[in-house]
Image (cartoon, rainbow, N blue to C red; front, side, top):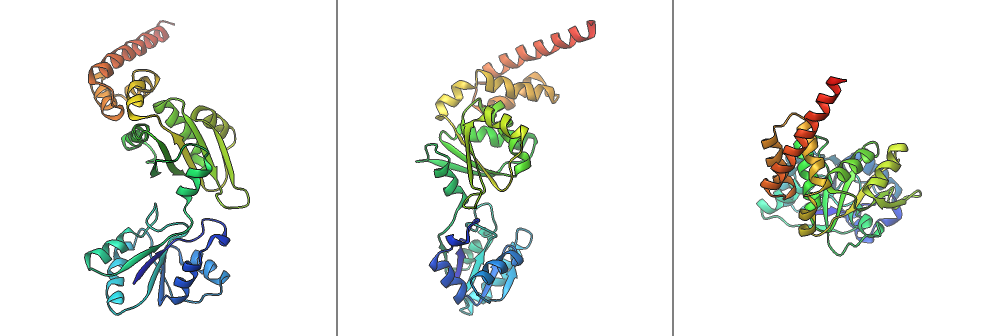
Length: 287
């Protein structure tokens, strides 16, 4: 059987008894980073063959495990931390098992997403996880629009040096919403910073955080979010598109698609913003 095993996200005390049992009984352990996993195994005095399985070779490794499972071997897969398959490799291994009708299971354990959802202090009866945002361009704008439309708590991973920019971009598109930054989860310097998108953007622009980070933002219901697009959020997105060189028509179309605003209202706002931009440019030339 293939076993996907969750491992601690920082505090080794969070390892489960089932995880230790699976690691000790495995014939071979596939790991996202064998050096990282070796440290975990050494800590618990476990000696097993290790094979690397990361995002660049996961498909190849998935093909390799099929005959091993058919031979009856016990195979464990672990990512660097947390639950395999959640913003980590693992999905291709599961896919190979499904395709070949081979047994697999998942052993629960530490999860940065679940820990951050509760630690944020924001309502988390329902939440959506968005992984890492695209770094720039249309895909990033679309991802942020999807966050705003989710209607409940949204969680995403972010690297420390991009935290301030991400809070700023979320604020520009979604307006000022309750938010939190959860850093170094389960570790000695675990911290929860709570505020709004604008206040957290300002805070971390002045002093970037350290360590691994999870961002939480509380989004309004989809209907409320759509209504808000007639104000600052729609204007911010249209202004960005127009500054990038989009025509009024194209900017209105993209903004309507990404925010849920009507094409008519987006076009009217785009015309007004273009007129204001042209007026400001003319004043600069006259001076």
